[in-house]
Image (cartoon, rainbow, N blue to C red; front, side):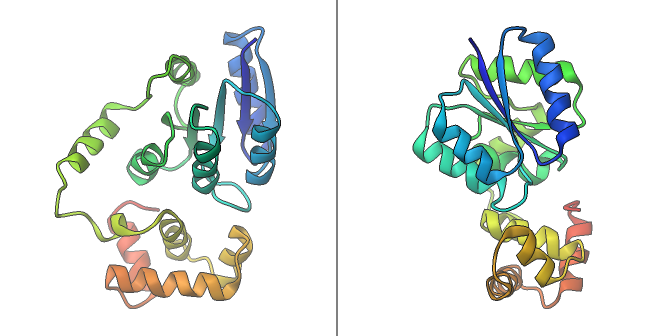
Length: 209
């Protein structure tokens, strides 16, 4: 029996994904997780054929959990879903070990196609993501400043540029205010920027919001 684990912090999204997958995989056993901690606990508790997970959830980021899953269960395929455009996260999650990246705006049959491909042991990527990966293989020296950030720094960058205060980011990511402030200083230094306003302008210019 096919075993699928769905992780998303929105109940409506989880139920929708469950319905789409059950219509295609009639006898599948499908379970759900509402946040990163629950996802990791369920991954460790049972053997799964595939994990379908959001990238943005309360607590630890989906990227962190993805890396932890691949560290302990390297053969477990993980398909990442996100509201974020491919050019923001697709390459990052694939480099972190994901088997595929799919935007939540995709049609249901695209989700089924992605799951089927991943279950066959293949990667699921769109043509635009494939082009992006190809350009990275060329070691393009003209990488944009945000492409030098770590996954966590990139996440903090997006939240800061969206106008979230440090205290709110700390709560969302389950970090201390001091830690978030350290990330902010590191981000500004790496990107050679001076303020949150600069970050916002950069994010708008590079379609990160």
